[in-house]
Image (cartoon, rainbow, N blue to C red; front, side, top):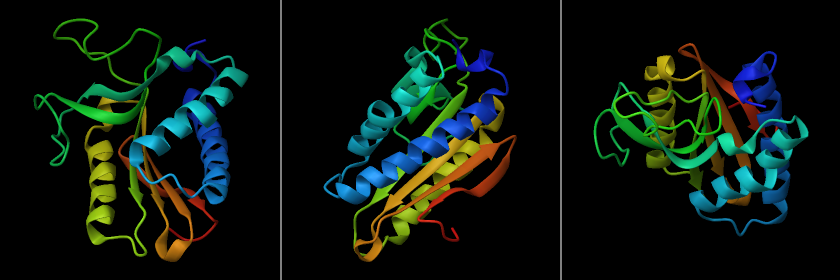
Length: 185
């Protein structure tokens, strides 16, 4: 089944992501060797999200790691080949086969975009926090091009794991969508 075809698709994805991020958090607490953003995105997608999507009979063929998506507002740090598109960490398309390149000049719009940032320093650097804010800003400014967006920050300040996820829906930002351990973001 396509994510866009389930009842209350954004609400369903919210439940799936909260559960998946919670299980990722528990795994990272027991395996702190994950030190690269790509490794954590892959671990989340294949080790947590896929299982939850399958449990809900949602087609995992809609997932795209490092997917190209349309953009109206260029992200200042995005690696991009043109100002009309950007590469995003994890994309969930409306249906299998959707993508930026499917129809020349008419890119599909994703259902959801997830951007990730990771800090393994003893103290989260200001640049990492600025990059996380840039992700939130990008999602907010491109909200018309997707149903929902999420920005995730995984950090180990002073050796203590924290995971935050902000949700962007209709331009509104919920910075406390997920905060683990439970604490103020």
